Length: 298
DNA sequence: AACTCCATCAACCGCTGCAAG
DNA sequence: ACTTGCAGCGGTTGATGGAGT
Image (cartoon, rainbow, N blue to C red; front, side):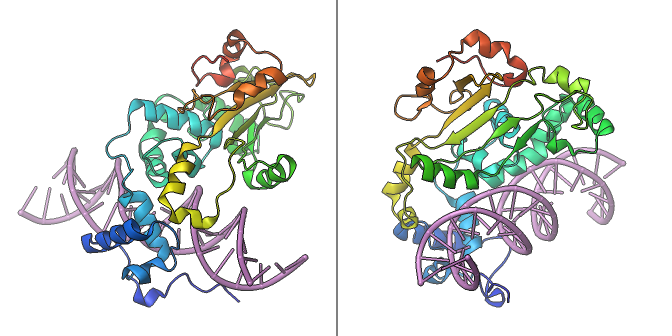
């Protein structure tokens, strides 16, 4: 028994939107706000399915969208974020005000991939192409699955909520090859070790909303004021690493990832008291791992 | 001018996670 | 605990326009 379709396909338009359709959608959302996409087309007098309306609004009609070419800074930020997050376009888009996930995804596939190839960098692994080729030649492990592995943030959210009663989104990155021989079946080659010399480190990156954030009910999206509040709650980014003696060090990447690190929005500062002190020199010493980021300090 | 090739990007499709019942 | 419906995400497709021949 399959799920019922999101709309009656026979009675919906497909393809490019007309100006009239755009105007109807804009007018409706101006009055009623975003949300309830399933019922929106009928209410707005549109012969479109709800998903189509949502996409059109989010990717094209939203008033806060930034138009025009990507800047060099945005390019670098996208590359940095992709190296951390992978193809999580919505997460990446969340760090670039005025840009949509679709736009970034397209831009990545058409521009940035080429740019990275021209730099001799594999856009999937963010490692030198020759190292990636060597790794591929010496292992059956897919390139995506080598040194850095990602885990879904969804399960962690639940755990985090139940454990610390905070609504956060986490993404973990772990450097898992710390004790393995470089020629072992892990597929880690000497080239890779040269590129990632700090293979004793266990990286743990979390990106989440501030601890005072409480999840808004779904109906909140109908209220522009709630949306404003939501936007103000900037996420913070922590890098943690372990030196094998359970000593944990951390560093705030808020600045490096392109959003403000201040007292209101960034709780990374708290790590200072609970973790091993890390000097700026230490962080820069690890430049092979953090080489995309500007010098950091607490 | 006509044609082909290619890059771009808007839009679609299928899937997943979450919340409500 | 399970089912269902919705919103959102990421991969893919197809229309379009510009460049090259």
